[in-house]
Length: 198
Image (cartoon, rainbow, N blue to C red; front, side, top):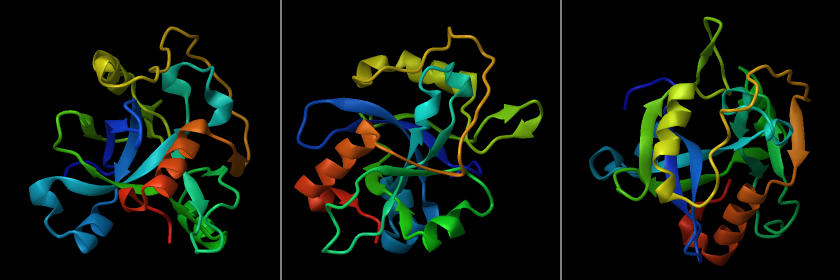
């Protein structure tokens, strides 16, 4: 599987619903191989979901920051506690920081080879002014996603807004994010459907 970041746009079916949403995911290749060695043959991979930073919703798509959807580590007595999304600014230290905070990316098994799931990928985060970003998606990937809008019900971010944007934000943001909450609710209703952080 090519690409450093291993990003994909997928059409993601909301369990218990006839609705689908597009989602930006990263394939966790090593965890997929460890848990399911046949993943490269059957296309079933463990995917970590990204969420648009809530402060960026009104920005042009190319200026929206996408950070991993971190949730508290699961134990049987806390599965219903604080289901807010934890967003941690991507950096060399973000994974170790998340672990120290008891957070892990929410992951789900997806079959990338399904025609009703795969949209485009793998691709890497965008280059901006000659430098690789850790959280922006290139215009050409957004344009590909927009061509497949018949596969999902949520909107593709606008590319007609001004391209200039200034980002302010904390290293670690905790916020309610409806898309994340729908995934967690689906997990609670269908536990075999997802891999809750544990």
